[in-house]
Length: 414
Image 1: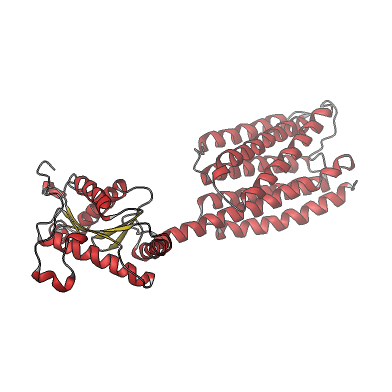
Image 2: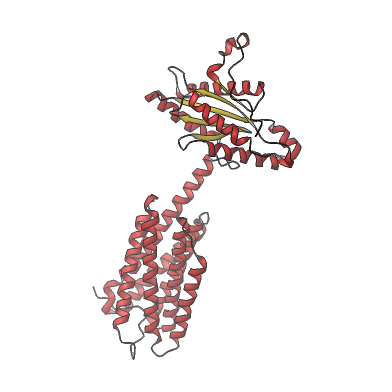
């Protein structure tokens, strides 16, 4: 395929005008994602640079073309920073800014020389090839364990971009510098027109792929915010109950034991009344951290409401769950209350799902009620301890039966 220079310039103008408008809109659409904002702004620069290169190719404005080439470098460096930020890899913004400044400085210096445009193109093509390779390597290495619909598109875009820049670098190296015509883009002339679609495809794939990745991140963040308690970082009540119904349904299928711990902070109202709600919130966060550090990876922990928490332990019977209750008691006893007023403590009710046939909603309510009843017995018998629901009388006969079995007494050593 051989196209004349004016046709190539017109195609590029139409394409980059379109992507410039789209990228400008995405700057606002993806503002909830920091990586998304970087990707969108980077593509704004890339599209504006492509438009400048197209105008240069049409009118022979060498300096405008060099300006566009510098914009390409800056845009792809910003996009690369967004990739590292998205995957939690150190972004090294100072190093990237320094690289951009060095490249732009070299272009300014070489631009004043008689053979400057050709030298500048060699620098630009080489740097863009390195950035494309680094982007591909980061996506392939770090993104391997993180599923994303958009990532494969960005991988392909990086490969196409890399091939395009290597072809441009090879062309620029093959043209004698002395006396060479100032060519801004090697594919903006009949000899290289076969490559004209490559940078356009790379830009379009990258723009679409990065947008999908940013939208996936925003959706995941919103879903996480709808499931997580903002203060403690544990599951909120709605997410906890959804997990509970799923675990009860599993119990109905395979019969594996399921235990539940209901935990309440002792004398929490006094902390709020004496030291204020900010101090109370700090205690809540510390207790939540103690619960999170005590549980196993398979256990589900959530804030049920106020100062009450719940932990669900799949494949765990009541006595095995008592070991978790003991760990929680010990960890919470190490939490210092405000103004040196002693240490925190919790009361815990432990129950195991033993219900017969019935709906999973009914079984979950029964399991929680058993653990909650055991919790109140722990409160009534001195706090800072756990009670097993199996050691308690049935609700109807509770007043006529003996005292339930209590967990370990408080540890005086704290």
